[in-house]
Image (cartoon, rainbow, N blue to C red):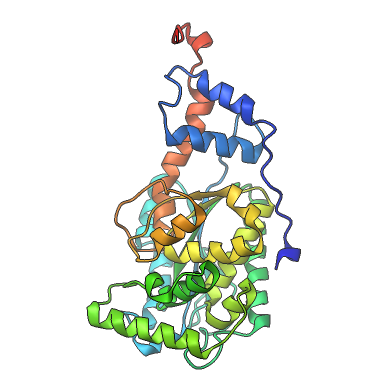
Amino acid sequence: MKELFNIEPVSKDIEQALKNRIDNKTKPIGSLGRLEELALQIGCIQNTLSPKLNNPTIIVFAGDHGVAGEGVSAYPQEVTEQMVLNFLNGGAAINVFCRQNDIALKVVDAGVNADFESDSKLINAKIGYGTKNFLYEPAMSISQAEQAIKKGAEIVKQASFSGCNIIGFGDMGIGNTSSASIIMSLLGDIPINECTGRGAGLDDEALKTKETILANAVSKLACDRTPISVLSAFGGFEIAMMSGAMLQAAALKMILLIDGFIVTSALLTAFRTDPNILDYCIFTHRSNENGHTLLMRLFGKEPLLDLGMRLGEGTGAALAYPIVEASVNFLNEMASFESANVSKATS
């Protein structure tokens, strides 16, 4: 995978000049907290003292999972198709939050077990009609995983052609927390039971069943612990496609808004491919899904928001965007001590 993308580490050449500009705003040093950190990160990514956020976009990748038939989700598989239609009709939470914050929304059919009519908001990148059941066989072939990664990259390239330089990622797929849990376990070297959560709302008994199924799948289906092998054995088409999209976004020096558990598991596969991707990522919220806090610790990051959410769809990214926007706005618009004729602290 790495040979397909050239992700440069973010340059620190402008870092001190950015720090000086931030510190010279009419405020005590450090008083804007995380906003100052964001302004510094974004300024370094764009290598400018006056960064801009252009055409913010969230892309929701949707796909079905063969393992959904094993009872690992509280919802039936057809909900994936139904929710894609809900996205296209503008009725989901992600639609509401994107409208509120003037964020463009695109929906990708990466592998839903259904066909959709043509729609300007829908990108047809279908690899297959859902993955296979990884309890018995690999979820997809290596070639399918590679195809998904390349299609994700193409989708981000198209977004960049429209001038987008900040992109959020969302997911939809009944059963996809099962894939994410195994990806996290194998690529994060974390016991599978610590990675497994309630998904869309399993009760205690169903959660125990899910844990048993995932443990059995990992023990039965051997694979080497490389990103492409793990994606092929246990991933989803939407997760593989997101991974390629993220790698391409970082290669294009875009800002990546990372949503919750599923999206962060896709980032883990991208990170194991090229750790430089982390320089471009903003972790938008902490999911209430069991394994997400452990993933945050693995990356050594703290998200912007912690609202007890576990919806997916990119909703955390959409809600955090105004905070990211505020960090750029204060850097560009807030007066300096000199311009406002305000005295600095004496010590």
